[in-house]
Length: 191
Image (cartoon, rainbow, N blue to C red; front, top):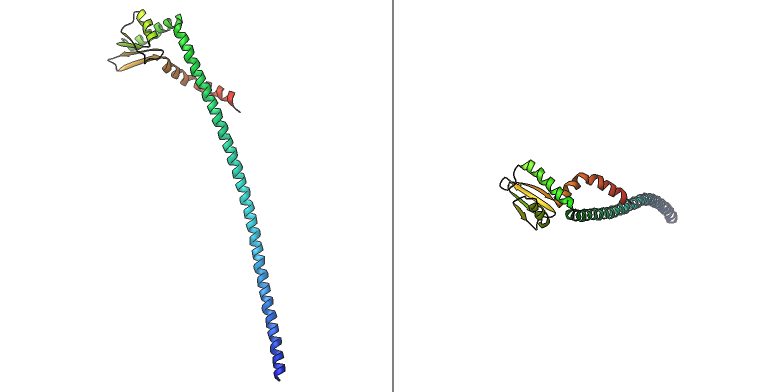
């Protein structure tokens, strides 16, 4: 075989190998590209799902935040109403203390305390109540500016005390009636 034929055969073989290598490279590139496109689609689907989940979570948080603000406003309104109720009760009690019925109320309360305690060693009362109790012949009565709207009776050498003062009575009545009142207040203030 001549050199020319040998060179021609080697050239053809090189061309064939080149074409084969190029075709394999193209096939490999198509496969890599196809895998990359598929991964990109999967990532797009995952990103889209995550975006939807994040948006749902954001909307849920906004709704929760709004509900919390509404509850805070309702609670504030309810607390203001309850505060107004307590203030109105205090005003009514002050008016009651100025009425003749207050003296009758004090007699009845003191009688009940005597029935429960037997003997009373000391009565501490706000100045108005102390004057009324002294006028009824009850002793010993001590006027005490710290006592608010009523009196406290002490017996058994100070170990037992019964309080008949407005704040304590109001709190006791409030504990009994609060659920009913609060339910009505909540119903009235619902948004």
